[in-house]
Length: 307
Image 1 (cartoon, rainbow, N blue to C red):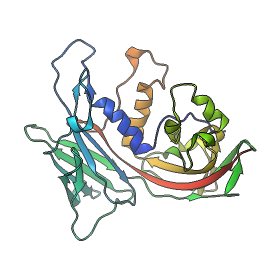
Image 2 (cartoon, helix red, strand yellow; image 1 turned 180 degrees about the vertical axis):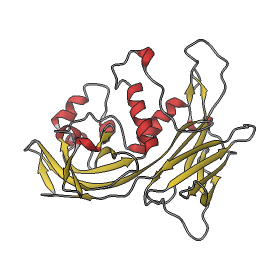
Image 3 (cartoon, rainbow, N blue to C red; image 1 turned 135 degrees about the horizontal axis):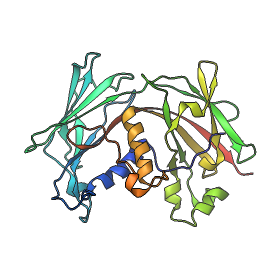
C-alpha cells in the first residue's frame, strides 16, 4: 500500500506559495549582513501546453510587508529558448511585461503559438536593468503520458482498502519518474466532507484548504509495474476529502521541480534533521532565485459515494 499525507495544492500553486516566502530574505546565520535584493523568477512549463507566463520579482527584507505588486519587476528583458541536443538555440520566444499584472511577463507570438515539446530542453533568460549578471535556468521537459481508468466510474467510500487506476508508462532521461498526485473536489462543500476530512477542521485547516490537495513527490518505485506498459496507482482513501466527483491528476516532474518540492518539504517540517542541519531549498537558477521547471500531467475523475 502507498500512503501519503496531502501537503499542499497543485504543482504550480504549491511552488508559488513557497516562492512567496523566498521573496522575504533574512540574514545569514553567521551574523547580520547588509541586505541586498535578489531577483526571483517563476515559470512552469507543461508538456503539450502553450508556453506559460513568467513572473519576475525581487526579494525584500524579512521584516518588510510582502505583496506581489510591491516586489514586482516590470522592466526586465525576458525570453525562453528551445535548445537542440548541442545546447544551441533552435527557437526563441520573446516576452513582454503584462499591462494588468505587474511582474508577470507574457510570451509574444507571431502567427504560430508554439507548444511545449516533451523531452526537449528549454532555457529561460532574464536581464534586469542595473544588474550586471543575467538570470538563467534550463529545464528538461518530462514525456507526456495518460491515465487509464479501470473498473467502475464510481466507488463507495472505504468500501474497499483503496481504488486504483493505470498510468501509461513514461520515461525521464537518466532517472526514474517522480510523480505528484493532486485531488480536486468538484463539489467541495462543507456538507460533502468525509469523516477524516471533518476531523482535520479541528486543526488549522479550513474547507477551502481541503478542496485541492497534493501529495509529496513520490518515486515510480512506490507503484506496481503492470507488464512494461503501465503503472498501477493504488489511491489511498486518506487522499480523498469530499464525497461526489473528484478529479485526480498525476504530474511527472522535471529535476527542477523535484528538487524544489523535496527540499521545500524538509524546510516545512518534513524531516527529523536538527534546525542547524536543514539544507537550503534547492533552486536551479543561475544569478537569481526561484524555480523554472516543467511537468507532464494526466487526469481522471471518480465519483465517491457515501457508505
